Length: 273
Image (cartoon, rainbow, N blue to C red; front, top):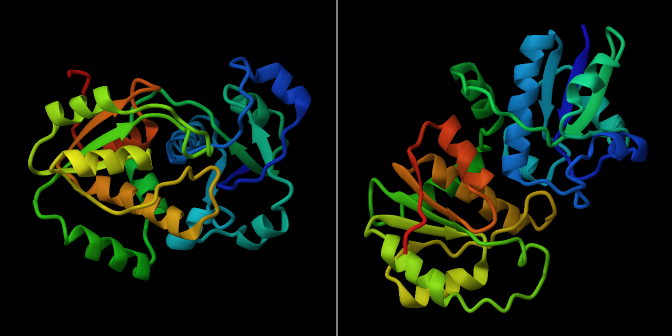
């Protein structure tokens, strides 16, 4: 049986011929966030059932792995030895890639493939097993959540852009989007956003509970504190009663979409001012 190991990592090898063949959307930025990781993991898990290969997820080379319990599998050492041999497999190419491998082969891959199927209970259990905090991190999560004044609480989530993640300056003054927050906020909301400067504006102008967290792009950052805060907000969302989300650049941010589906949390896409 073939073994496919999805190595969560920032470093992977990109073959130009492979990219020219499969990169239909002409992507040029190959850094992938938490939503991308979860989506691609689900795709590979579903394919493992369809194509009958052993599927393993390994997170020990990814910065977020320091906050999650180690996933035990027979190839832990081999992953470390092959950290420079991880192949990027483009979206839409995964089945071709797996079919090209001989029986009994072991492949170390990274992919951002898409998944449009049903989220089964088996998938939920598999993903939840990946996201098991270490004991110190679990205590950190529990202590912070205990400070929320409302129980239960909603998440009010705003995804504006990647500018701050990419250290790009933005001339946005947030006047209109601040009106949007005021219109859609409720007393038991916890406010989170990918844009630190926007969080500061909201904190000064709207009575909403928010954490003093520093959020990062998990496909780019190696800042331990920012990674910890970002992963904390992931677990914060898993504990809420409802997600209200606004995304300026997509229909819905993958960061909240997959939490909603895996942890069975109602989600509302808010658009009204």
